[in-house]
Image (cartoon, rainbow, N blue to C red):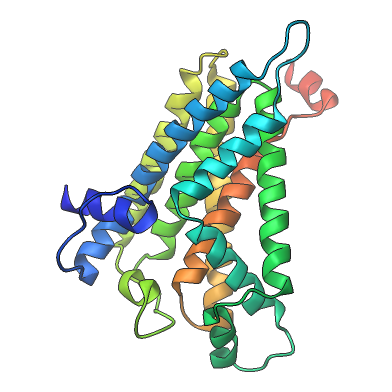
Length: 276
C-alpha cells in the first residue's frame, strides 16, 4: 500500500500521505505501479466524458463529441497539475534548440523555468491531437475505452522508461530518483497486465464490446508501447540519460499516439477484404 500511495503522490494531485522517506527502491515499486494510476485516471476521465456527452446533447441532434473530449483531456491535465505537459514543453525546448551544442547546455535549457517557442508549439499540437483523436473515438462510440487505454498506456510508458539500465540525467530530481529502478521482469508484467485490462475493457464495453474492439485496444497498447520505447531510446542516445521532464514528455506523447490508434478506422476496401 505504501508503494501505491507513493505512485499516486508522484503522478497525481490526490491528497494522499506519502512516505516519510523516499528512496530508489520504493520509487521503483511506485513506478512499476504507474499503470494502476493510469487505470484510475482513465476511469475518472471516462465518467466525465460520458457525463458531458449525455448532458450536452440536444433533441433531434447528434450528441457533442468535441466538448466532452476537450473536457476529458483537461481533467487528465488537472489531475496531474499539468506536470506532464510542463515536462513536454521543456522537452520540446531541449530538442528544438538544434543550434545548441552539448548535452549539458540542452539539459540546462530544459531546466529553465521559462518556456520557449518550441515548448509552446509542442504542447499546443500534442493537446490538439489528443482532443481531436478522442473526439473521433467518441463519435465512433469507443471514447470511454479509448481514454482508459490511453491513460494506462501513457503511464506504462513511464514504467518502461524507468526500466533497469536507464541512467539519470541529473544527480537530483525525479529522474535521478526513478531512472533504472524498475526491474525488467516487473516491466514485462506491467505490459501484459495493461494489455489484458485493455482487452477486458473493450470486451465489456457498453456500446457493444466484441473481439474486434478488444484486438484494437491491444494493438493500440502495443503501438503506444513501441513508440515510447523508441522515444526513450532516442532521448537516451541524444541526452545520454533520463530526466523528469523527459518522463512527462514520454507520457503525453504516448497518450497521444494511443488515442490516435484508437480513433483510426479501417477503410472500406479493407473491411470488405476482411468480410466485415
